[in-house]
Amino acid sequence: MTQWLDHVSLVSGPLPVLVAVCGIAGAGWLLSGRRRWFLRWALPLSLVGAAAITALLYVVVEHVWRPFPDPIEKPVYVWIGLGVWAVLLLVPRALAGRRWTIPVSIVAAAAVVLAVALQINQIFYAYPTVGTALGLPDPDRIDFAQVPPPTDPVVTGRPLEDAWAPRAPGDMPASGKFTTAPIPGEKSGFAARDAVVYLPPAYFTSPRPLLPVLVLLAGQPGSPQDWLAGGKLTATMNEFARDHHGLAPVVVVADGTGSQLANPLCLDSKLGNVATYLAVDVPAWTKSHLQVDPDPRSWAVGGLSYGGTCALQLATNYPQVYPTFLDLSGQEEPTLGDRKRTVDEAFGGDEAAFVAVNPMDLMKTRRFPDTAGIIVVGKSDGAYRGGAQKVYQAAKDAGMDVQYVEVPGAHSFLVWSTGLRNEVDWLAKRMGLIA
Image (cartoon, rainbow, N blue to C red; front, side):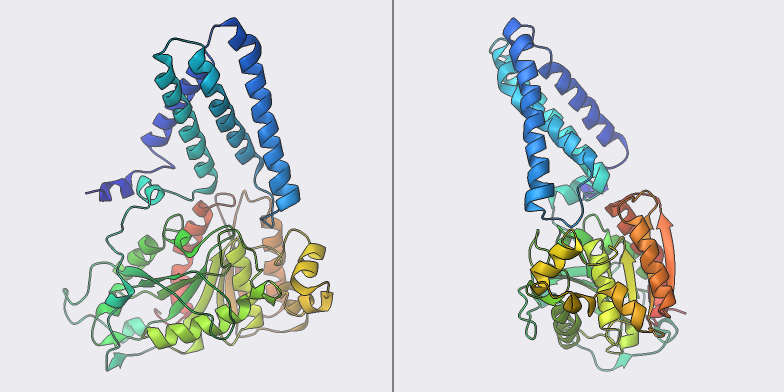
């Protein structure tokens, strides 16, 4: 009954406009007190308080705590400051009128906070619809226990599309399904959160086509679930499958951080053995728990932001596992904010240990003739665009078959969902799924 909410957009259409209008009206109400003490003291003090709280938040996040390798965009702090001001104005505005003004002031402050939240969402495109924001149940979700067992025989071929077709129109579901499953760090010891696994319609047939595998990685902060919401993974893969007789890659969205705010740099270091987890544990689990093509030519890795950096790291450190990569707005190199801090915290100050696994350094000394990749970045992404261009040139100089693509947008899910949708055909061709 609530599926219609998945079609109500939070980034375009009438709802964001309506919420913005309500937010403006709410702000007007909060500022409209006429008592002298409200105008002389409450308004200016609340403004100063909001500015001080926002400035303190900025200093703590960007200079003390530094949980993210790159600074948060300044407009985000501006919007947060406006939301804080609305909250600080709530009590004095309620006291500056009659008793009935208390619930009105609460609604007004809530309207401003909601409008602020939608404006921040417009920057990141993390929640494209009301359904994704509310985390409503998805009809395409299944329990891992419902994943069908292996079939015998299987259909193989390269390209696979030429060798397989469903037996009958009703032989498979109309759309793919996704599930979640723990992937233990048996070799790495890395404690990862549950992975998200997408299975295309063709996976639910018998005999089953032996499908390629795309390992996807989220950003930081982030989680594998981000690829379902802002990344529009199921919609993109289902659209591809509809055009190719139910065929699409099996997608394993693995956890590359361990928690929402952790930044282990996608390396084997003091911060955790993430590289071994993603290059050894994840492929081993996938091959043993899912019926997929084990040929490395049929495997690719991709990711957004931190995950894009990680995809390049895996492609350069483990080209025999991931000869194909999709780097969506990745950084120039793995970082905790600067090279010194990164080397100190991850390798105890051993610069050589970092250089030995850093993609930009590896591509100076090694050749990768069997590796191919696409680097996608937003045209308005001032923080990452320059680094993406350097990575592209370095990969090209290292002998990779690499492409550089710019799409409209900044550092947001608008770019990352578009990047995956635009490049899924290239990935499928590279992995032998289609011609």
